Image (tube, rainbow, N blue to C red; front, side, top):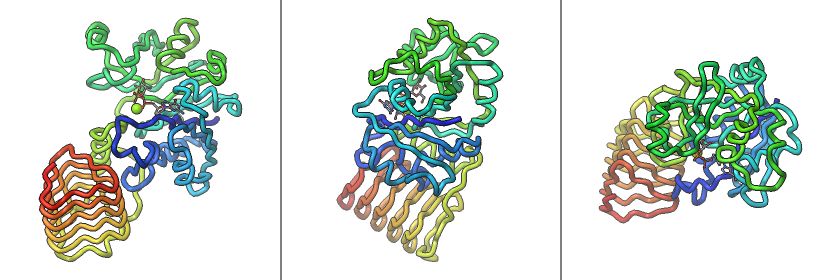
Length: 346
Ligand code: GDD
Ligand code: MG
């Protein structure tokens, strides 16, 4: 059993965070995002993992290495040009002619992959999709099943009318188990989308196509700043099972700084007297000066928050400088290396 992680998208909806950092390795609680997927696959006993890349592949390879630090073997395949989700699988599969678990590279989940694979085998399925019920399916692939979990319909990015008409809310969670016969549905080197081309084709051919609906499993696509931040809040709230964080090092924290027990502080941070950090993730090497306030926020490595600045519900990229007395309100997203003049309001 092998796994393929689709990690070639440009991450446009996560800009400016993805200008210098491709989405698969944006820090999540101070570790490269894909490490959570790799850990999830490793727990299910899958250690041969291929990463299908297209955008900034060298950075991803450099950060993750050959996987030996994480107990897996990582292989990297870079498309000459983006081939779409299905085309990327076909391109990578010259070496993967066996049952394969496919993951969208921007999904954070504690879903049990081992039992998902067992269900796929029991059903004798050619393709099995994990589904998740959500409130608003419009940004996803809407999937209709019968009472035996057989997939009847797949509608990518459904319109409001379609959502109203179908009265279902189970969406494609971006995790699949596929048999190699799916590869035969697409020509090598051509752009194909699982969602727009291949899943409809599987339905047309009436191949065995089933779903596994998540129940109380955690699931989120981290592909927008709002969902990326919300995923951090979920993590700090303990909603995601089974993942560790790097041990915290609070050696340079002034005794008069106040940091709540939920917050994650990276190594080598300096947090000065009177500063207050609440429900936040602070990257390594960050400096937070006197009386600054950081709440419900994510700060990437090596940024400096000057005296009495207030940051709430925001994401600050790498190596930024937030000037003194600045106020950043909920929803601010500041790209890497930005400098905000003293007294800025965002
Ligand atoms: N290698 C490669 N090549 N990867 C790609 C390409 C490509 O051309 N295009 C997209 N990807 C990767 C992205 O990096 C991402 O990890 C994954 O495929 C899905 O692409 P997104 O752009 O994030 O799609 P989406 O979020 O709009 O929709 C998809 O995910 C939803 C769940 O979050 C669809 O699969 C929906 O059906 C699904 O509900
Ligand atoms: Mg996505």
